[in-house]
Length: 163
Image (cartoon, rainbow, N blue to C red; front, side, top):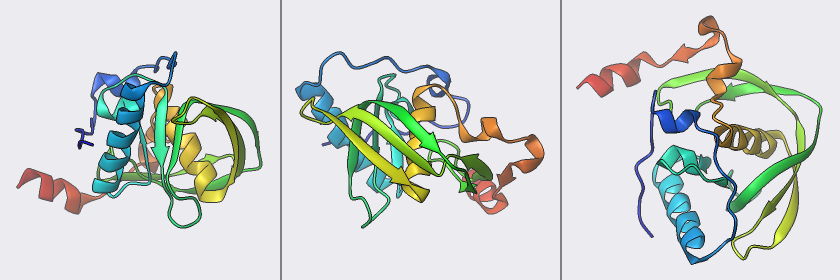
């Protein structure tokens, strides 16, 4: 496994629409492992392949005891319902947050690391995380849902970054 560099800010790869993975092979399994290691190291709860500069439809997430590590290749939301509104942040937009409205429930179909199709139902934080990460695969950032007035900037982070 290896730590990957998380792309931030206006990096063009964050706006690319990721391509489907034609086959889950050893290279994809290594990428999944690298992504999980990178996410944990950055203390995040989700990471999309775009965020490490790879425009493939792959995400990893872990919201804690409730879910454990979830790996998805070619994830597709097949059902969603309800609404929830909560603050989101992003490893690719450090020091920035904002309240985003998303579906409260989602059902997703994806491939696992063996290339087998599976479905997962999620609500609350896990549903939010899944939607956030799948948005990355479509070149969408959480700030796209917000006006400039709704975006919160952590000034202490900005001053730390300048040092």
